[in-house]
Image (cartoon, rainbow, N blue to C red; front, top):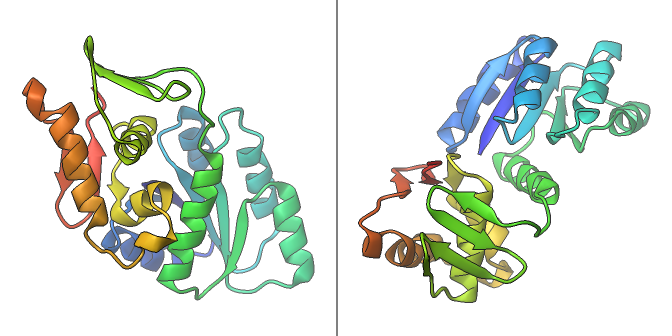
Length: 223
């Protein structure tokens, strides 16, 4: 998952950037709202995290601009202090969530996965990545003209990858998006699932598109 950290506090951002990278996210940071708006406009990030001491008018204006983008990117606001009025103002401006710093890595990751999941488009037109094609409504997939025989779980996993081509997806993101709570204690279920999908979409065709990023997660080659 790729994030943009908009650091309006000057203190939280660098620590958050390092912490997120250590947990497997791809992270860009800036202190300029215009750069955050540019990134959201070209669609090369999954979410924006705004860090501020306490949400002010400039922060609310930035949240509103990000929320008004036609290709809307989820926005999380991380603040050092806030009262009930601040929370209402931030959420009404268009933010998807507001968190008080410090927040545990586990809770932050779970909330981030939830808002990105809600922002994922519902099944619709076919997806195409390179020579892979997937029909979400018909639940059918092809490599070139060869139809792939996928289990329901393999199909769901391939669909997640094809909705995020070229993006690093952590094991936690895949687990949250494809498996249910009964699998939370099985640390290797994602690795096994990816291995099964790779045997169906890559190996028979001499391809290596579903890549392992050691220590971080997986990425489906964009082309």
